[in-house]
Image 1 (tube, helix red, strand yellow):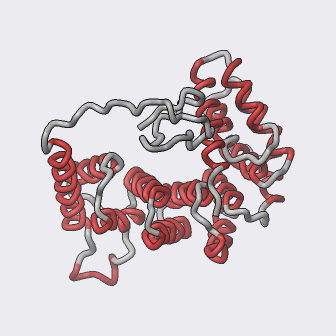
Image 2 (cartoon, helix red, strand yellow):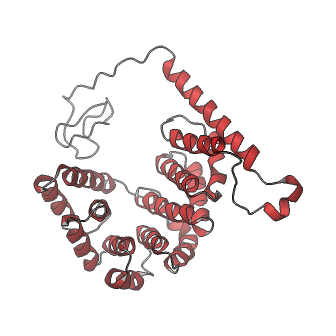
Image 3 (cartoon, helix red, strand yellow):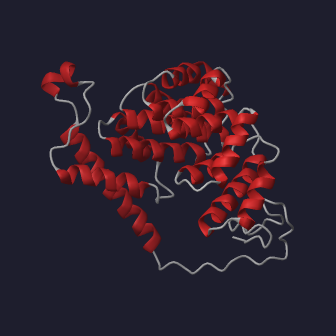
Length: 315
């Protein structure tokens, strides 16, 4: 890999002559020397990780699956764990799966039922993993599988899964996966989320709709921005409005990104990654150079780099 001397992006392929982010000429930049991995260590770690994952998930389905003698009554019940070891092993496996680069599709599919798990942390982690796979997937059929699973999870099920699935759908839609053929499904899911009494579900609905290019809820977002008691609902209403080109959304994000309140400040900076404001690049560049604290400067640089990545993604 080559590191660009201009923007610092360090994942340019060795044979690339121009930085994939800023297009700086890097033909004279030598590839980084990667330390050789000990023989068979990498393969062994991957195999061990997959075996651990399969054992943990097999234990989960054995202990937490539906009662075969009472399948009708328990078919829709959330999974239950007989002991803490089962629960911890599932959480650990879901966490470690994010580090396995070559996990086969058949093993990834074991995570799909966990989107309906009754435990907040399990459902949340399952949605996160599937969202990451959807954005990294090169096979269109597999990417569609993950997107459809997230859409189903956002429509019904535990609150944590619905909320995170909606956010993952929004991230995926704006990161290169074309959501247009799913709009007939996204629209009612967004409407249900936006209409919910849970303010965090409303925030997720705002994000999903706006990142998918749906403007049906501009009025609700404008109302939430003005009067919602929930910081999350106000922030993601602004995020959605800014994505759809509304000046009140731009202004709120600029103000929150410059303010002292955390975590609102960091999330507002992240939201500027998706804003269509013509001033967003200039604002983030200024913030990255003049911020009073290093954390804010780093967040602004990260958002600016992500905007450059999104700028080269086209349907």
